[in-house]
Amino acid sequence: MNTPINLSLGEKLKHIRTAQGISQENVAKIIKKNKSDISRIENGKAEPSDDALKAIRRFLGIDKAPLLPLELELYRNRLLICNGLLDTNRPEDARAMQPELEHILALPYEYDLIAQYRMLEIRIMIREKNLTDAMEQLVEVEPLLNHVSNKTLCGYHSNKAFFCTISNNPRSAADHYLIALGLVDKDDTSTTTRLLASIGTAYSALGKHHHAIRYYERALDQFKGGVLSYVIVPIQGAAAVSYYCVGEYAKAEKVANLAIPHAKSINDNTSHVTLLNALVAIKIDCGDYDAAMSLINEADAILENTITNYASVFEMRLVYLGFAFNKVSCLAKMNRHQECHEIVDKCQIHVQGDESLAIILATISHMITFDAPDSIAYIEDVAIPHFAAMKPHGANLTTTLCKELIAYYTKKKSKTKLAYIKAIMYDIYEEIFIGE
Image (tube, rainbow, N blue to C red):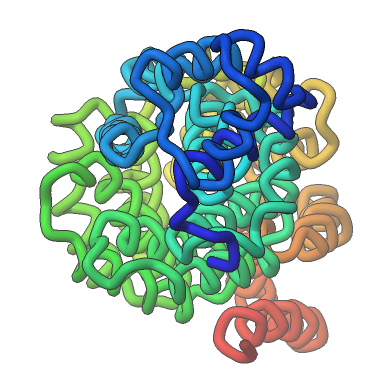
């Protein structure tokens, strides 16, 4: 840190007084002293009496602010406790502690402590989905960054990465998470685990699943149990998806089957669905449609509840349609076409107002009549180009459709079309397996 960390009591009082635009004369009048007495206190040539200090603090509005060493230690411990509440998924309790901690803001010279408090506020706001205010807080922290500890700087880059993620900029998110990882205390296993998992997520969003797997595996190796148990299931779910994407089916199944009971025990429906989805995709690729249908049916009740509560969230609608795609694909191959049409009709409400979701649903509909010329044309001329352009998010759906067309054109012995679709597949696999 560049800021002085051993200010005397008098220097602290001077910082606070001048920041508020209050003169020494005004302070002297309040505590019934001369201006010279205040000057001597601020210059460290005299110590204020307990009564005088109490009066000065009251006048400056810092009665409860952590001014003395023991008070500062107490506030640092309280910040740790509050962050621990967030780590253990107790944001309401963390919010309840916040009013007692905001007195930190009355101390203009405590750059690091102020920044730590702001980071705590940002974490709470993110948990409450108050992203606009959280982003504004992050901007307010930036002028302090040259004067803060590595721990606080780590928190800044971690939060900055989160906002890059929700702004659909996974490359910048990965960069900020990697900076944060380089700043974290090596003994802080909980933060290290979260950062490793977050880097994996960023690489997954970039379509770099081999990179993602490396960081997911490090996160799972780092985990020692305890307060982070509720975040391990999402990491396992993400790892299972990445294993599937690189063709490591056995590893994907192993991770998913280990994680599903835990997801059930903590009622983590989102991770439960993600894990089931990975298993469904594997069963479909292996041609085991009965097993895939069994898993899809297991997910149906979870999805119905989730989509009801989060119908406006794009990601949840996308997951819902992903399962609808898999279900129709299985049912169509089992010649259960009436059930396929019922699924498509049921999904109509979830695609309104979004072009990509509407194209997914249209693609699902064409999967029912896959061999028909107009269905082949739609999948080849509309669906695949649309999803291939959605790099990297459309890669999984594009490869699934390409596999279907490759099987179709192989059966038809259409070498030209077969080469064209395989070229699309090669481009996607090049993105996944080659590069940074």
